[in-house]
Every structure is written in C-alpha cells, then in structure tokens.
Image (cartoon, rainbow, N blue to C red; front, side, top):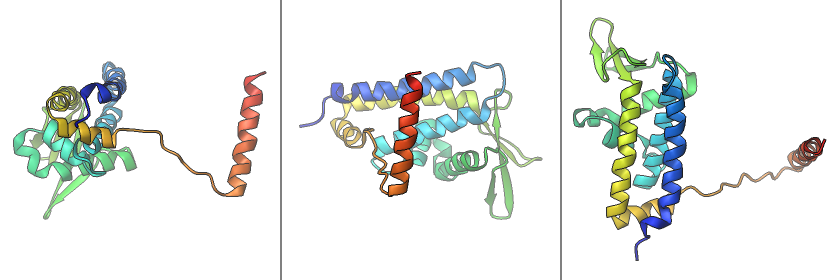
Amino acid sequence: MAVAFETIAESFRRLRAYILHDLSLIISAPTGGNYAAVLVVTSACEALGRLRFGTESGGGRFFGEYLLPVDWRSVANQLYDAVRNGLTHAYETKTILQIGPHPVELVISWKEKKHLSYEIDKAQLFLNVQVLVDDLRRAFDRYEEELRSQPALRDQYYSWMPRKTTVAITQATDQKAWKRLLFLAGESSHS
C-alpha cells in the first residue's frame, strides 16, 4: 500500500516554505545576493534530488531535469557540480569549466545577463539568479504534482524524508566540554 500524499504533505510543504522564503528574502534586494541565492538553489536541488531519486548524489540530476532546458540536460551534472562546489567551497564565481583546451568561466548574474547565455570573446557562461529561482519555484510545483499522482514517488519521498539526525559525542573530553557549556548556557538563560 502506497503512502498517502497527506502523510508527506507537511514535510514537503515545510521544505518548500523554508527554501522559497529564504530565497524571497535574498532576491527582494535590488542588487547583490547572487552567491547566496544560488547556494540556496543548489542546496535545494541536493535535498530534492535525494528525495526524488533516492540517492545522495541526486542534486545534479534534479538540477538538470527540473531547472534546465532540455538542450542543457546532457551537461547538467558538470554544471551543477561547478556551481555548487565552486560557490560552496570558495564563495567565488570564478569557477572554470575546462572543456578540452577551452576554459569557460561561470558567472552568476543578478538580472542583467540572459540565463545560459555565452559571451564568446570572454568565454563566460551566465546563470541568471532570477531565472534559477523562478525555475526552482516551478520545480516545487511540478514535483508536488508528481507526488500527488505517483504512489511510487510518495513511497520514495517517505523513505528519504528528513528525520532528526543524531551526532554522537563519544569522547569523554568532548562530553565533559558539552556538559560544562550546556550548564553555563542554562545558567545564563535564568539570569
């Protein structure tokens, strides 16, 4: 028996609300926020990819199938990896795709540059933040419709749905440090 949509609805709606609310705050600014917005989009793809495809590495697949035009899907994993890891690890848009002997710089555009446009003379590929956010909104809507209509996807979501994670503190010195800090934090909250 498949999981009913109502069983996963609250989890799905909470995930969508958190992500889209944060993105709305970022993109409501007149300029800036390029990196932060794209980090939220790629983090959302990672979470949604895990839920949708049942793999830890589903982010690139979700990015390709839900956010990119069909023509770009064959390079979705490399593009996703360059954007996600370039920004996550360096907070820098000077990510380079090395395509044979030809380097291509990925540039995150706030609004000015057309999404997935390429300037040949500068070897720059542009990703437009506003388009990515709009595409993510549509991806949430599409995924919800799929969840409503496909029992196997609901089962997949349910089996990978976020649950509390436990980080075990096993070293005695770490446990002692935690107990001391929690005691002090508890005391200061009563002051």
